[in-house]
Image (spheres, rainbow, N blue to C red):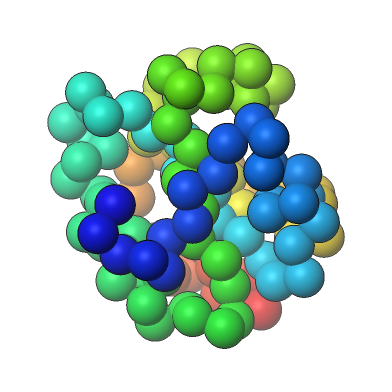
Length: 108
């Protein structure tokens, strides 16, 4: 990931990076072979830049972290989940930039 504002999360860092985060978190469950995942990646980069300091944009590779994908019942990718104070607020499939911004704005 070229954008250092998008946080790469793994099974080992999930609790500290997402569940215990002080800021709201948007998590993108994705895989490198997924066309729609690659299509929304630049949008997530832009959103991460816009919400820097207000919310966290994170990515979890489902191939590298299958236990997390199972834990959150990820059946299709990309799946976007917003978390606030460790709780799931909203789940979405592929979304437009405006929809993603709206998901995050609901948390602020």
